[in-house]
Length: 189
Length: 269
Image 1 (tube, helix red, strand yellow):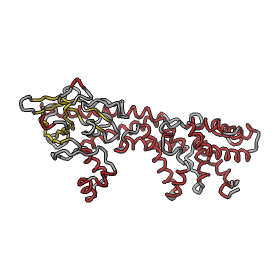
Image 2 (image 1 turned 180 degrees about the vertical axis):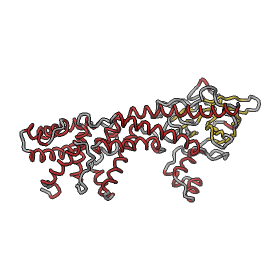
Image 3 (image 1 turned 90 degrees about the horizontal axis):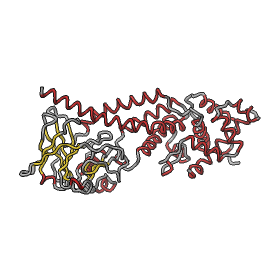
Image 4 (image 1 turned 90 degrees about the vertical axis):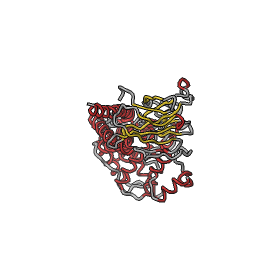
């Protein structure tokens, strides 16, 4: 009987530990999944890849053993993992040389670089809102139609009283201007 | 107009194809040969697309699938963790070392680091070593039953250090890793001078916490959790303030011999 009791206790020990961990995991997951997913989505633009990369981020998070992380908050660390995961994704996808990737990263391919700006990572939708406010009226209108209202190029042209060719030019320039404004806008956040 | 900024009609068409792909929910990639300036335009397109109402919400199926996958991963990790965290038997006298493996320690950090480098040991191993050795002694104890009393050390041996111990089942697996420490009263005046034993498994994800003699706290190497010497949460320094305290173990001190015995508390295991 003694032996049976012992092995039972052993099982209880493991079960107790697992319970604690899975509670921690649950809170980690519930608090941050939405944020991380939306962040990743705003960088890759489609559900399939966003799901895949978000899974990678959380799997790395629970495997992660990094003594340097120390005082970093869980959230900040998750976003760091997310950024490197997204960088790896583009690296694999493009097989571009390291130097040209660096140029892309420097120019903000992945969003705001290091520093405090990323700690309170503004939600992508909030970034968009601020960028729209900072843009001239005609650019704001075309981006609003194409993205927030999800209109086709044709519908947008009708809505704005422009030709479809005009809309294509306008949306290109609007996004380009938004990219130029992004650093400025993130500083204000 | 500088050549780099020249927009070609094809650029507009290419971007439009990309945006249509985004709107259709396809896994589209920006073209390969973009200049950095053009790449930023495509990045903006993805950012704005994510602001399409409802577009960037994770589906409930995905949320559930990933949760299950993480749970499974955590479980299998737990089983492996029992073995990987087994510390080597060390009875060498403690030597004060910086808690974290600094660059300086790596470069000039004396015999351990140099020897480890010479045999090609990984940095992780050295971190483990550097952290393990600081102001704590290691004891391995064979146990045959989970709730038996086992002798860890003596009051004299503990002194101002922490004694790290692990109990080993008859089959060689580690059943418990813990520390014995004397409360110096700074964190918990009510128990000043009392001998305390705690489980060393961090209540976050089960990594083995390391004693740091310099601040008299337990530090988790995995996610930076910090516990006071009586196993409580160190709210001043830890980012992980929502953690549970380290589980306390039962302690019995023999007044005449100074022998310290420990066992698992009833019930909670």
